[in-house]
Amino acid sequence: MQSVNPAVMQVFEVMGLTAFSISGAIAAYRRDLDIIGYIAVGIITGIGGGTIRDVILDRPVFWLNDPYLYSLNICIAASIFTYIVSKFMSYHEKTVNWFDAVGLALFAVQGYSMAYAFFEHREVAVVMGVITGCGGGLFRDICLTRQPFIFRGELYASAAIIGLISMAFLDSAIIAFCIIFALRALAIRYHISLKRDIAS
View (cartoon, rainbow, N blue to C red):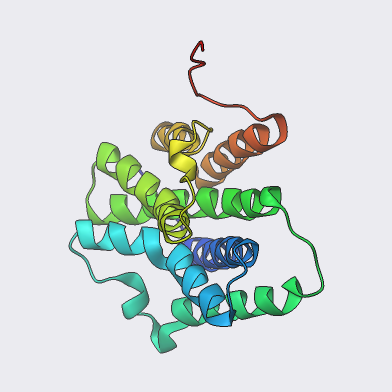
């Protein structure tokens, strides 16, 4: 597999941190938290998945080794921005879902690429990509006592798996991103669920 351009991965990381932090902060808005709550949930959502990935791979945790801690500062800035804007706007659950969909797709692809560069096994890279993409949202929902997306039966972790398998075969981060985001968009738009209907 060819390595993905580091500059592209840097863009993916910044966009993913921003999208996930905003999704976390919006979820905090829905729980009527104060600005500290916004920042805390935004940070956890932004860096959670990548932190789990790095701990499992026994590599330096990405945000602790950033120049000027830019990853952490992006999460803080995005959370504060959302806090300010939230006073003038009305959000609903789908707003969280759309930002989360962007973060999922970006971080899943980034997590796959980083894991494959560190440990050249596609199966491991897929697992690490899913963890990177889903981990932050999982922490967010646990902190806010919400049922996590990955347990709601939606196309979420499964969307990441499908997209990352395509990345393993097609060697294209862009295609993988598009597949993951498209599947999440379809699930959000048409309420597609993997839940098994249980007869009452």
